[in-house]
Length: 377
Length: 155
Ligand SMILES: [Zn+2]
View 1: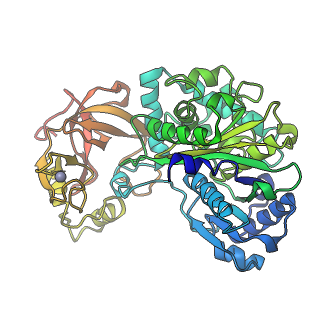
View 2: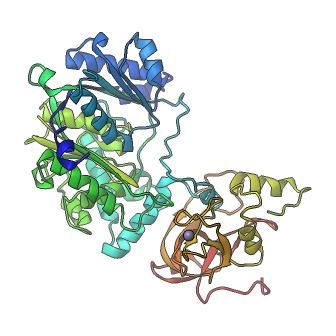
View 3: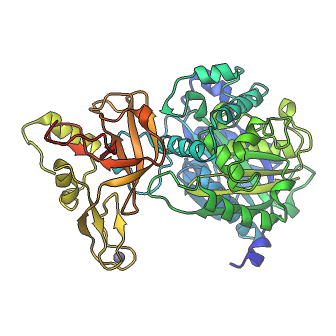
């Protein structure tokens, strides 16, 4: 598809409703619910939010949970689109693009994207690409985090020590989470507290890591022209780019795939990084935030650490980032909770989390497959 | 790789932690026992590959042949694990894993040999290949800081 015809999908789809589990409550309860049950619950709340009936759903994209199981439990039928993705993350931009195409061609009218994670589930969320993990195990390598640790050590060598930038990301996320009633970790985090935390895969510390928790996120997507009222959030652009790597690390900190995705995504949306008011960045580990800010063009190469240390990503900064607390403090719903928080900000319905001037939001992920989307009210 | 069939502890290390490459990667494993790094090379297009693959070269579909690498490389980065995540793994924590770009142009993982302290490491240092021993029968790729390596005869 040419860029021109692809760009016609800009604005076709709108997010009409969102819902997330109460992650904090699930943690307190020591959740034992299946992913299907968590997904169903989130979908019902998202439908209510979208003022839509379950019978109208004719598309279901399920991440880390079975679409058929969810459809069966909800009594859905005659679905024109069902698709299972093994996790969220890198599949979010493709899920939005697929949804926009189905809506554009009238193949479907009401599409739900749901992600559910439960300790009862068997899906793996290692995120490790390629088939070489066996050659990592003999070194007792701990998966993607180990490679993120290697990359950020190299990044510090090339651009200057960034340990206080990583702490700034973790602390900013936590500061947002203290205002978020559903966040898992709400206890304030200080710089001393961060540096007192144990080293895991050095240079990464405990607070650089996303959590593992239970919950679900659902979003309802409809044609923009079909969304009644004033609560729809327009999906203005999306893109994904893969540059495969033998291991999870990349010598350029995923710059080329981020830049490729950013170019397409912003061109499609007709905006630039400068127009973005809030950013939601997939923080599987805190270094990913630095890599994404540079790769998606919010700062120059090697400039992300200073940007973060200057407080620019805090809720009162020039680019509030991970407004609900991100994956390190709110919940690790593999990007979907970040997307939900962007929608709430743009609707001006984020309660205590609301930041001023939230007109355009970008959701982004930096990894061997990078991607994201641009949203506006 | 060759295993002592009577020693179940050895079998466990191999089964748990080593890639099950059967016979096709034998030159890698036997090379490690001799202290050498053997990687695959596509003769027609001159490209090297590591970790080893069972497939043919993606560029020209020629079968790979095995080639002894120089064993010298540049340290790209490293990570140190402060606890043991895998029960039964023979190396005590903290242990360090390096990413080294060897002269043949391939980036590869290696464990840090005990002769080099992690405090001595800096990115872009020159490293020398030296297999790390997991047991009498199991050696894995590893590196030591150039100049720090002792000969196998000394150890
Ligand atoms: Zn070839």
